[in-house]
Amino acid sequence: MHIAPEKISSKTDKYLIKDIIAKSLDLQILSLEEVSRLMSIDDERLWGDVFDASRRVKEKVYGKRIVLFAPLYLSNECVNNCLYCGFRIGNSTAKRKTLSTDEAVSEASLLSKKGYKRLLLVTSENPKFAGIDYLESVIKAIYDKTDIRILHINTQPMSVEDFKRLKASGVGVYQCFQETYNISAYKKLHPSGPKADYNWRLNAMDRAIEAGFEDIGMGVLLGLYDWRWDIGALIVHSHRLIKKYGFGPHTVSVPRLQPAEGSGLTRSKHTVSDTDFKKIVAIYRLALPYVGIVISTREPAGLRDDLLSLGVSQISAGSKTSPLGYIAEGSLGEDTDTAQFEIADNRSIDEIIGKIAESGLLPSLCTACYREGRTGESFRHLSEGEAMKNFCEQNALLTLKEYIEDYAPADIKPLLIKRLEEEVGKNGSGILEKLKLIEQGKRDVHI
Image (cartoon, rainbow, N blue to C red; front, side):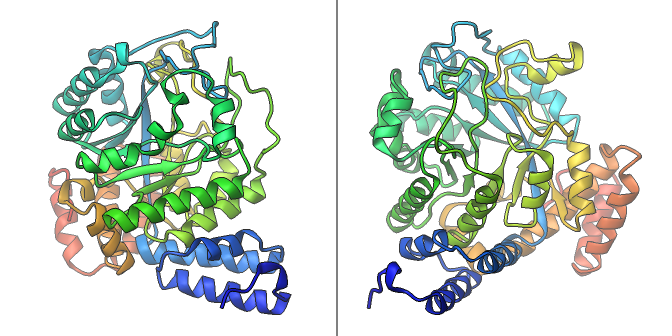
């Protein structure tokens, strides 16, 4: 029997929320109605229960590990006019740049030498400068000439044929955000360029899956429209993909609107507060328990630290959001080209790894699942069956050991060694043999 929310007493509502939380703790995907009930909670004590459940669900699926990565921006030469973005074609003062293959390799090599082993390639939409031929060339060169082990990509929607080429190049996750699911708001915010075609973007995930991608990354840009609408729509989109293909998003990102140099959007009436931002992360975690939830350096350090214990499972570190940003940082001290948006957390990978360890969590530089076939429906079932946690925690320990041996600065090495030893004791004797292999010089040890 359906009970209209407005007719539910506070006592009944409390019991309904408890039932929804219990369903999430059983790692079951929530219905849209259940998600709507979470969104409508106005009792802060119940939100405390939701936040606690979010943490517990994340640990049941992934354990204590937090995966780190860095974005690598390839191009800011864009043909779209997205009003909120510094890359938009209407930004007449923008300093434009598309990396050559050699420059992309140099950026990736620099990041690899800091300890990163997974990168997210990001490019604006411009078929002339950053089409599929260019992407294939860059991806091949990075794999051939650096120690990067997996590349994910955030780029424009493609045809099935081009998606097949992208998949064959060795990309792990294909990531594309709808930005907002509200058609009216979408049209106002994307007045020109290929991205103005709402349906072409909406159906990108179907074409990517048809082309062979089993790991896809989704998201909305929080602040473009009412967050409750957009979160609900993304979850409905995920439900449709799961029903059709057996899996939905591998990751859900939570980017929040930030200032961008040369943007055409001066303010938004849909600003998302820090309090609501935390609620959004928790709702995603409970609604889609198996997915990775990704938070970027758009958010300030303190808030990102808080979210590590509220369901986030992946975090970027030391990010630059302009082409050649990492090399420019080392040589000039500032970015030379226009960035996509302003960064709020400027901490290095070393600082963030130290913070994760200090918080009792487990920093991870793992890249194993994409290369071991734990993707798509298999990944979802392993996660929902609580089997993924074992893979995640052991691989986190192995990558942390490698980081300690090769990259960790002296000031955080004792903390990381202590954290490693604490967790090794919980993982049985089998992990010790693999750790010894790393001490002896073997790399990329994983399960």
